[in-house]
Image (tube, rainbow, N blue to C red; front, top):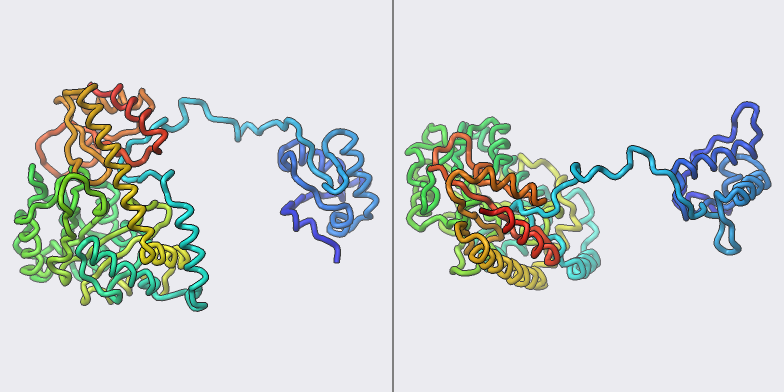
Length: 472
């Protein structure tokens, strides 16, 4: 059987049936225009004359003659054993593909918090885990699947979370989702169905979360914040279980985002007591619980009352957000409603990545990667603190005992000018004002929220130099 030109991945889309023009000239003109316009890139291998003739319904000699004409003109090259290829030559770049002006390009360095060092993603170890997981996967793993996610991953997570974060959860009550936002969407829908009208939040956080709560038909009510963290004792005395409007509270208790303080023991006890009295839920965002440096580990709040706390975790900070893998440890009585909200099949999370992460966890590769990342981010944290002491002594770094971002306290009335100076230095960085809830009334505080996880090891020194150049 003749070899099809599709073998080479080339779809020529040529029309040789032009009025008043023979097939040889029509093919020659069409190929020449495809090369001139850049549609056929230099080095592209063309189909054999036999294959193209069969596909176009013309004589093989016609194709051979057209190729010969274009070889003579310099558009194509033909070598024995290598076939016919588009010649290596300068091809005009369409105006739409022209390189943008420097002013339109993004910043040179990104210090916006929330993304880890993607250059350190453990590609080799992940590939090995993927091969092992795929080889061991049963055939039914490739079907539509349980809406909770693969049992291999839920089982591995139950063991890991119990060991590393103090979470008490049965694999039956763990649900795999495609990240924190997906999990919050599911919980928002369930809370609305339960009759909740308001979800209490922290005074500082991410506007994307508040917007999502609003789209779920819920109001977000900020709790007061002081030097000891979120004032959970300010939660209303009634909740969804007693006819009240506040059905849940969203917290980052291990490492408040972005302020960086852990929720104090008395306030942990207060929010758990509130949930038990009112029938409300605590939504715990454990976004960077694995990364700690100068303090004892702070366990998950979920361990205090698994029946009242929904635990959120993801691979976005520990591995990469592009994996789109997150998980919810659900109270047993809530699990059926959240599973129903997700749907009848696991549409959102790729099964191969789930199986790979399960293998990554059980083989110990995940622990090794977290340990290496912890050392990398601690080294950067220390370099940031040293640079501030030497170059900007009026700036103080806080919230740095864990995670991979810091809050840099600035002199009064300087936040916006420093953000503008940072942009001039090619630096993407946000002021603390960007993370303040619109309805919150905390004391005015000028600060930058600096994520030191995003740059690569190679780019971090230059990013730190640019940051110091922008600080007062």
